[in-house]
Length: 193
Ligand SMILES: [Fe+2]
Ligand SMILES: [Fe+2]
Image 1 (cartoon, rainbow, N blue to C red):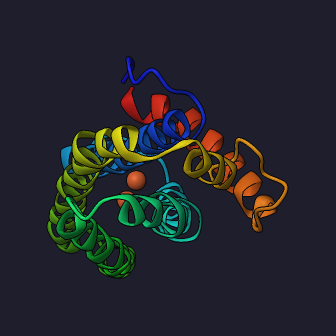
Image 2: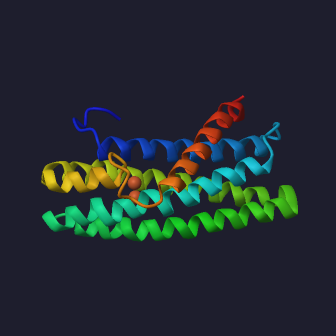
């Protein structure tokens, strides 16, 4: 997505959304290949994608949204309080959904093909869930942020989202997760063939 007219946190958020969407799309492709009976990568690949989808939003992306972006918006305007409350709830709901996905994958590992439809429907549900979450943040939250936040707000939000990483804890974790993402992104084209 382009045309936001702002670098820093906004472009980082959009990139992180895109990376998550790619990882989630990879999970869907993987399950589809299994359903079609095609050759699919080993289950360890799906396990790695799930690990990324669990760790990245929970420990990197969502905390930064809640603590910095959403907090600064709430301080400037009440107009989207309900939307932000919903998104906070969705962050918690997303964690529960990822655990359900992990359970469904474990059942598939243990029992085989009979557990594939349940895994597949959970994956498809997660794809829809995340697409909706992303859409609300990009179509509602970011435009309000661009309209209401002032320079000192952006300085803090940009710093939190990595424009200036030094004061932010968890940099090592982010680097590790970035490496994992690159590995997953390299595998996904193979999943497509
Ligand atoms: Fe979010
Ligand atoms: Fe987000």
